[in-house]
Image (cartoon, rainbow, N blue to C red; front, side, top):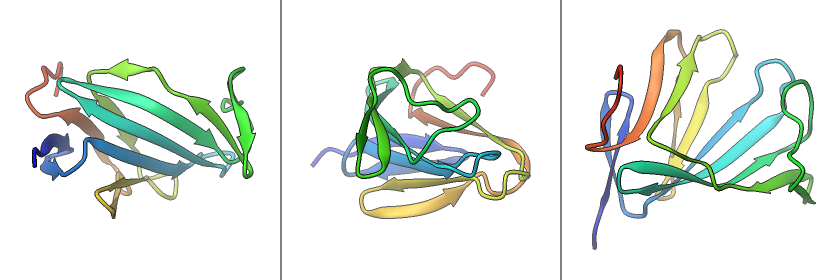
Length: 125
């Protein structure tokens, strides 16, 4: 079995499958948001996003469909890394889930939490 290496902040995480999910509540609207990501070499690919409602700055895209109370959109976005601002003022942070396990990240004020494939060039990281 081949493992996928992912940098999660200062930690190195080995994943049995190259997928992970980020889940959080919008800091103002308090609406739940979920994204499914896949690690491909030196990039992260958004496979799907889902919003549990709508509000300021988080309207569903034109390709979104309503499924069980969630506005679901196909992904397609590819990025070298994710930088999650960790202000500590949003009342939550993010829930990172992979391989059937979850952990909360970015719940306290500090530098951004960077998620990136291991070995990827990270500017300013």
